[in-house]
Length: 176
Image 1 (tube, one colour):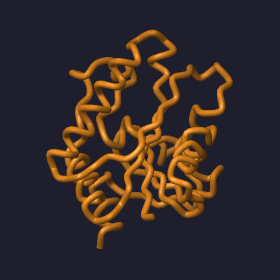
Image 2 (tube, helix red, strand yellow):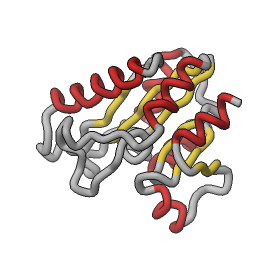
Image 3 (cartoon, rainbow, N blue to C red):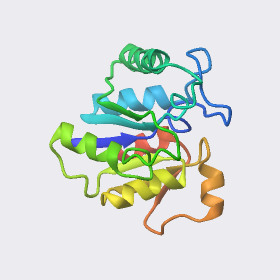
Image 4 (cartoon, rainbow, N blue to C red):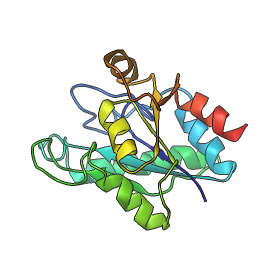
């Protein structure tokens, strides 16, 4: 199985320090939907692992998150592709859960769902927490310069991290 795991906010859609709280605020980054569809059509399973502490903070209900993910799936399907498993952490940063990145819980849930070892599976993110989560499960950390990616890069990243401009560039690399 060719598995690729993506963070959501800042990788697939534009991020906001004020949180993405509604379907109207959920805006894809240019080329990201097409990239997921191209990967899917090339035989890749594309899963998503996303922290969504806005739920714990009361900024939006789970139904809104579900609507965002249904919209993502519909947009990718319009391009002839498919999104695999989407897992989220609904907890706040101080809740002490095992799923909030940089903890490995979301990635381990994906591994269990697909019955795979995550060693060397690419996990694409835009934050230090994403990169740390990847390393925890021996996945390949991949940083995109969208979202918080440039800020993350400036603060220093693990030396094994692969760096791309955006998700479209990741897709081109994996499909070639």
